[in-house]
Image (cartoon, rainbow over all chains, first blue to last red; front, side, top):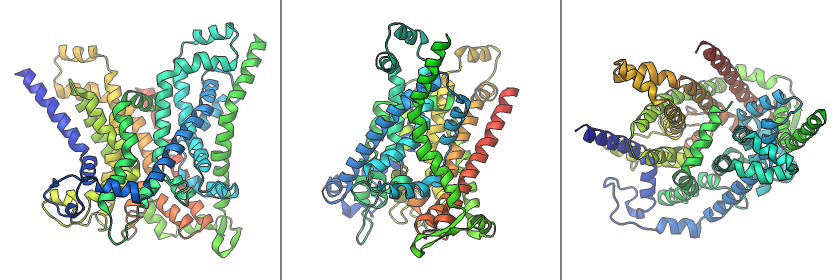
Length: 273
Length: 290
């Protein structure tokens, strides 16, 4: 009896959470609904499922190019943020630095920096350097914006590495490069993955900078393309739904497949201080 | 020893240099530049560019649109953070009570958090559709124009924001709940504490500190929020969802007042920093007493 009651409680909680995700599932269903049935609700369920909206998005819209831009920009941002952030985080965690307290304070303060405050000077900077509407421009801006959190997270993870491992490496005469190659990066494993995922998601989802610094399909990312999704006479709800699903595919895969790392990163970001 | 120390110092500076360079050129330098821009009248299309002192800020004191945007920003931040905290704690307790399926539960929750805000905007635009929206259908066929009615638009956006960010609060609380040792609960049971007493006297106080941090992060994000209102309503109808960020953006890139828009950006910056500073002070005193 008790056991039955607990199973029932479990089912109730899971049902409540499933209904929390209804906005997502409703859009998923919409993306497979025939055009003629979109604006006729109820019935809630379509008479048949169709791939027409996905076909329209892939063949006739600029979404494929936007997906490619987003993948490229988010991947390069992640790589660059880690390449810059891992050494920086190591210095913060392990080495004496002049003005270390100030550096730490600046890093924490810049995580609170509102994008709207720097968007106007960055716009002028991008224009002056001819970086508007390029991948490089967005990668640079995204990297600098993600960097404080990257350094913050990584320095916490580096402190968890047993210091003996590093001492052994320096006794063995491994140089600075060897220390990272053989000790820090291998031992950082899951922490590195967690940080990389959060950086990737930030860049994939970012809208304000991407919207301001892009002009054409050459560099427009997925959120921008979705916000600007064209409708000629009426809003193409089915196509928008399909495009939304494509835009949320990587985040969904990360949540489902790499949840462990994601949660680790989220919690570390809040608790380490 | 001193030789070792000097080498470490040199290595430290070497390893830190790229981070300092990146933050210096793309965050600190623009951060100073925006202060300078905010002291100018700069309207590129009319070729206007001159020093204006504090004119832009003085204008804000009597600008009713600014007052309204400030009020909207604060109402948005307070209501959405309050709802997120209450729902987030409830969700964390619910997931913690599960015996199985916690991974699925977290997936369902984190889905909302992980996707781009622009996608969230599109999901809710469709849910709020006046005739075919699921919400109106669920309410029994009303034709409420959620995003077009000045009384409904801001609450509608708050709901979308809460949906998107509550999972963040829930995950932090859930992780804290996992860290409470089971002995604590066993002791409470031995003392004959009921479920409510255990919740109020043990579980919620244990969540106190992580909740303060979650509230801090969420408040800072809510004050800077932009994507949802910009995409869903663009600040309308009748300016009822125009936050400071949307006002700043429209001044900068739609009416092209580079100086005035920058002043608005600086105000958002000052607001965020003030709130962060006040919160951290509060956190510090609360740790002393705890």
